[in-house]
Image (spheres, rainbow, N blue to C red):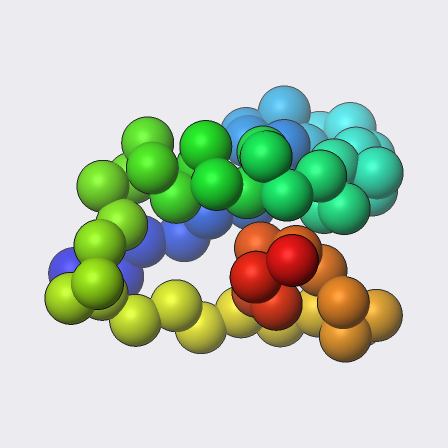
Length: 57
């Protein structure tokens, strides 16, 4: 299964929420809510190279 996750949730698709990508607690909650586990792979894109969801900060 392929699952898309965007920082800030669905509302981020219609309203900018750029600051949310830097809050690691939100990234952890998003991955937990999607039942992400050690058996899954995370592939992400980041323009800054430091987005917590993908870098584990």
